[in-house]
Amino acid sequence: MIQPAAIYVLWLREMLKFVRAKSRMIGAIAMPVFMLVFLGLGFRRVEFPGLPPEIGYLQYLVPGIVGMTLLFTGAFTGMSVLMDRQFGFLKEVMVTPVSRVSIVLGRIAGGASTSIIQALMMLFLSVFLGFALPSLPMIAASAVIMLLISVIFICIGLILSSFMKDIHGFNTITNFIIFPIFLLSGALFPVQNLPVAIQVFAYLDPLTYGVDALRGVLIGYAAFNIWLDLAVLLLTSAALVFASGYCFRKGEVL
Amino acid sequence: MNSRTTMEHDSLDAIILNGLTKKFRDLTAVDKVTLSVKSGELFGLLGPNGAGKTTIINMLTTLMIPTSGSATITGHDIEKDPEGVRRSIGIIFQDPSLDIGLTGRENLDFHAMMYGIDAAERKKRIGEVLAVVGLTEKADVLVENYSGGMKRRLEIARGLIHHPQVLFLDEPTLGLDAQTRRKIWDHIRDLNKKYAMTIILTTHYMEEADYLCHRIAIIDHGRIIALDTPDGLKKLLQGDVVTLGVNGEAASLVPVLQEKPWIREVNLHNSNLTITVTDGEKRVPELFALAQLSGTGITSVSLRKPSLEDVFIHLTGSSIREQEGTLHSHVHAGMRRRMMR
Image (cartoon, rainbow over all chains, first blue to last red; front, top):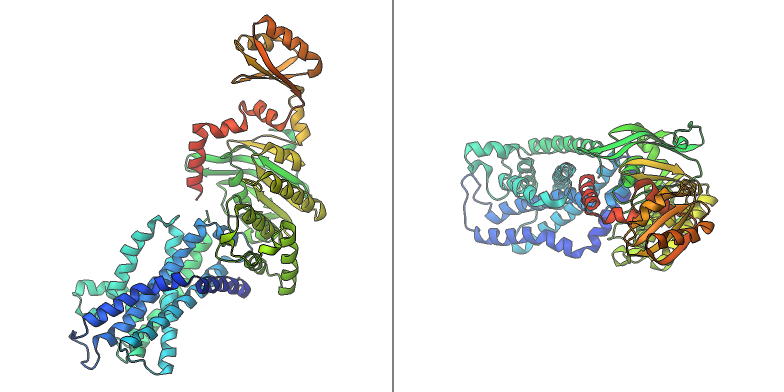
């Protein structure tokens, strides 16, 4: 059912295209860089209630922006299936004997790799703004969390794209699904400061746990227990991998 | 339906369609198509755009699920065993399906990898198919820099690299120049002969179907309206085709001609009168005499053996190009395209 060779091909394709499309890479991290620079510098002196005073806003913001990078690149990679459908390449993959599950896994592998590379680039760029990097083992641990976050949002992108037939719904999805996920996640401010009615949604947002876990390993401060964060991320990503495999197997290609 | 279409299915049949039907909401794109293609046969689906040819191919290649009916490819059912079907087929799509961000060689290599072909064999086969389609020198150029003809040839190379038992060609020469088209025709024939590959191709070019196919199914509005060898189809007309260029009152000549027992069919298109007659050579003088009597001037005359185009006109009442040209069929085709996405 799972064909490693096919997964490798699809991963390799993604990596080749990523390396070749330098403009795509710059475009993808431009927005998080702007957010980091302007929010990080503009709110530098702000003190949020509930945060330990030794953590400055920039320290607090960087893991959030890394999470945002993973959210956007992940969801867009998932939805790039729509581009493949548009350009006919999806048909070509779908008539080969490669199992649908392998196609999904190949795409997740490729998307997760490129997302993590971009997130790490963000992390290292933030050093220039004064972000204090943690130790190497902690950075390695953050990469594992990045993997889980990107798998979750690639799968969400894949599932959404199996319901959409072309790229016209793209903006709607971005505005009504991706942005709320970002804003609710506590990437910019502590979720605990939201009104209780809205906090409920924040707790349903997988990125909330992702960003919290990233803070735990990168700046040593987490609002929740980091093991709870990890458990939520693991369960969500596993469930979504199955769900996207199912959506992909069921649907017609054209 | 022709009696050949319902012949008993034996083990030599590579493709069997049984009442295959596809509906898009209230539009029936493919309507109970039943036919079988023998192993090693070069079989053509001929019809205007929007006749349902591509929809049939999409169902046979497991990209679409039929509304009703069934089909098997080399014994694998398209719905129950889609992976078995996918292992035995190759397809060259009508619309481009290459990854333009990769080079020609990478497109071929990745395709072969997905069929589990090992590295040494891949290298050998890629060299072969590139030579066949004449792209050896351009193999390492990104596909986005290819011309339309080069892309088409690369797709053909890709369809062949895994040596499929059954090859589907959806309008293989659409939009290609005459020279490339002829080359591709010869190549398709070669494949069919050399590897005894079963090939099913769709086309709306009469010459293509006539030149290549052992048998042809003519499809219109999702139904098979005739199925036979090209010669067999032409015999449907039972006669020769005389085309008269006329001026003046041609309308008065038509009823006169229709009375004659030796005239099988009369069609008036603009100022061209197409007449199907038995013993064409002997009847031409008589036609001239009749025209003179009814006061119709003749500006040109030609006599030929019937072509597939004539057969198509005979069967559907209009030429394949006219069908494409009408607003109705455009709307129809557009609607289909939208629904098939």
